[in-house]
Image (cartoon, rainbow, N blue to C red; front, side, top):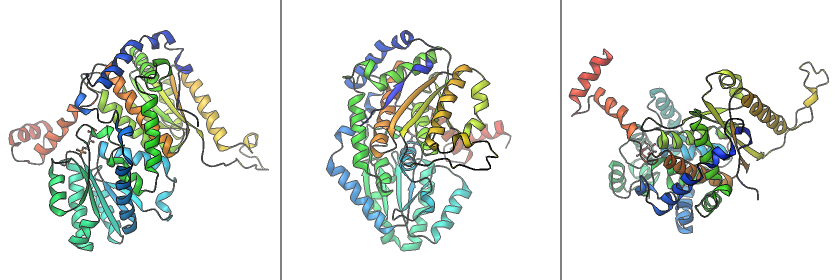
Length: 448
Ligand code: PA5
C-alpha cells in the first residue's frame, strides 16, 4: 500500500537531528492542545476529526447532487475564492488528465470564477457560457465575500436569462453557512439546494467538507477514496502516533528547526505540473495560518523542472534564506520512454530507452544535491501515487502539520485578521457608505 514518507537526510548539513528533536516537547504539547481543544483558535478545530466523522449518507448526498449537475451540464462553474476555491482546484488538477479541458470524456468541464475580479476573465467566461449548457456551484462560508458575490450576481443573471428563473434555481447549488450570511438568505429565498460549511471549519481547512467534495465529485473523482485516504492521514498523524513515527510531527519539527536557523522562506517544489495547485492550496494554508504577529515562514512554490530555468538561478545562488520541501510521486500513472534518434544531433542517445520518470527522478536528485551545495536544505516528502486516496491523505497531513507548526510558533493558526485591511481600503475607494473619511484620506495618499 505504501506510505507518505518525510525524509530529512538533505537538511542535515544545516541542522542536526538533535536540533530537530529539540522540538519534540513543543510538538507533543501542540498535539495535546489540538486534541484537547485547549489551544488558540480552538473554536475552529472541526477539521481535526472531520475525515473520520464523514458519514456514508453525507457522501451519498453529495454524490447524488454531483450526478444531477453532471446530467444537466457540459460545464459546471464553481464560484469561490481562497479556502472556498483552492482545495477543489488542487484536487481536480492533481487527479485529472493534464488536457482535461480539451477532452470530451463524459465529465463536465469545471471552470472556476470569482477567484479574481478581472474584467476580461469574467467577460470571456460569459462569452463562453453563451453557447454552453451549464450549472453553478457557489461557495462562500461568510456569504459576503466580494469576489464570489460579484461573480455570482453576474452568472445568476446570465443563467436565468438563458434557461429561465425556475430552471436556473435547479442548476444552482450553494455551499455556505447553516444560517448566516447573504448567500444563505438568497439560497433559501430562491430555493437552491444547499450544503453547509460547519461553523468550526475555517475556509483553508474546508477541502474535505462539501466545499471541496462537491466540485471534486462533479469532476468525476472518487470522494469515498479521497475521504478514506484522509481518514488514514488523520489516524497516522494523531497524538497517539509517537513523534518519531509521525510524519506531520517530523515535518513540523524540521521546518521549525530550519526557521530557527534563519531559513525564512519555504519553497514547495514539485516535479509534476499536476501539483501546481496543490502548492497554491498549501501556500494559502501555511501563509494564512502562520504569517502573523510579525512571524511565520514565507510559503513559496515552484514547478520543476520548468522553474529550474527561471527561479533555479535564485535558489542556487541568491539570498541564503531558503529551504525547499520537495514533494515527489513514487509511481507515475503512465509509462513513456525517450526515443532513440539515429542522428543524435542533441547527443541525448545516452538516455534513449529510459523512462521519462527516471530522467525526472535524476533531475530531482541532482537538483537536491546542487541546492544543498548552494546552501539550500531540502526536506523530501514522497507519496506512492497521485490517486484519490493519497491526495486525501496528503491534504490531511498538511493540515495537521500546519496546525502543529502554528502552535509551535505560538500563533493562532485558525484566524486571518490581516486579510481585512485591503478589503476596507477597497470598499472606501469604491465609495461604500460609511467609509467617506477613509476614502478621502486614501485618495489623498494615492494622489487620485
Ligand atoms: O481561509 C479563509 O478563511 C479564506 O481564504 C476564505 O476561505 C476566503 O476569504 C473566502 O471566504 P468565504 O468562503 O467566506 O467567501
